[in-house]
Amino acid sequence: MKTATKRQYSMVIDLHRCVGCSACDIACKRENNVQHSFAWSNHILETRGTFPNTSFRYIPTLCNHCEDAPCVAHCPTTAMHKDDNGLTMHDADKCIGCRACQQACPYGVIYFNQERPHRHYREYLKPAIAGCTSTGPEAAQAADVPIPVYNPTRATTYPGIRPQGIVEKCTFCDHRLAVGEQPACVEACPADARIFGDKKDPESPVSIALRDHASRVLKPEKGTRPNVHYIRDY
Amino acid sequence: MSDEIVYLTQSGPYWDWKVALDLFLGGAGVGALLFAILLDAVLHGKYRRICHTAAWLSPVLVSAGLLLIMIKMGRPFHAYHTYLNANLTSPLWWGGIFQPLVVGGGVVYAFLWNRPDQNVSLRRGLGWALAPLTLIVGSYHGMLLSTMVSHPLWNTGPTVIAALLSFATSGIAIVLLVHLARMKWAGRLDQQDHIATFLNDLAMVRNVMGALLILQLGTFVLWWLDLRLGGMHAQQALEAANRAYGPVFWGIGIGIGLILPLLLGLWSILQGEASHRRQQIRVIATSSALIVVGAFFFRLALVLAGQVPPAATSIF
Image: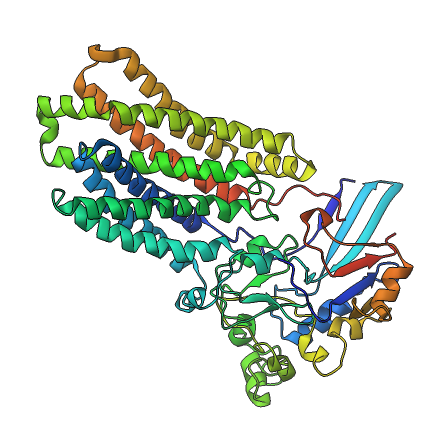
């Protein structure tokens, strides 16, 4: 389902610059309070060939915010929707947890909260050092937050911690974009491998990068028109 | 060194046996309703008792399927959002709209069958109004899977046709099975003249059922060809599905659920009048049971196999 939007936020990942440090993954988890075993920001490791003709690739992945997003097309309640910035967003209140979006996504970037989120914090009741360190619930209680490491700004546009029974996914850090900041993964990248901006603005860094380099997207044959582009593959 | 791709996402399958059973029950339910409507319309009350059985079975089966899908949902009490927000591109939205309509209409239709001589025109009118809805819900069960571009095994045209044919065959089979059970409990299977009339009347249904089973078999061949001769992803999906669920799909779904009932029916026809009536009843009951079992396992294998990740392929 293609919808006309004012802006089309996109990301370009320069694979030649990427060093595979996973700082993007960690920053995303911290920024978005993403629980253990979920990875809004993720990566594919590919090893191919036979020695000495071998190759290794590290491909960072995240929600592609597709222009023809299958998750949006399949959502029965319009919980998954496109916004004016071209982002594929998720309305947690409308979500019924049918998992059709997860099933429809060709990239496996949508996660379902089968159990109560962040269980391991709540159930980790033994301190690392008895009488010295705190347990997870003690640390959270002391800071008056739901989990020991919690970013309250996430909750400005999406539940700070997504409840049990619904899906969740990358939002391109829409809460940061709303205050003029870049997504956390872009900020955290030590090699400046991630370029972010409005693809509809010809002078944006994303448009310039796409003009200067041949780019690729994941699974182009699915016809989803992803907005995460990869340049300088090696 | 073998090629290796590591991409850890949430492990599947996202949809399990509950979804497969919902598809089976929903399909059989609307199949049963359409069966009742067509029998009533075409043969004008010749099969009253079967129609009565079919009409009551339909809302029970479709409701059971809906209940299962509600149990499967993460937040079933938010399901009202389906009715507040329309998404015409979502098969699930269509299912959410039309399945309750079929259940509601089906219950009224079933009540009208409790007194078959009264309100005949109202019953037939309601039947004709419900008939297109049964086709929509039958197609929905196939469309739900076939529109998933992410799953090459499902993303084919024959998936929809197979679902439509399967809803018809499983609907008829489950009605015959329950109807025979009703006859046995009522002691009508001991009355020779009653059995003779029943078998004579059923000849047309048997022929229609045979034709539907052959068409279904043909659809599976087309579906297999579509994948086998398709692109790399389709071939890999077929290979992965066969490896994990081949025996269930081809063995139980096709072998036991389609080919065996066809052979039994053929054998029964060849026996002709020489065949003992009780034996014919047994053949009908056995074939119907096999079709029902096969239809469920076909859907189970299809739902689960479609979610099997294929072997490593190039990332871009």
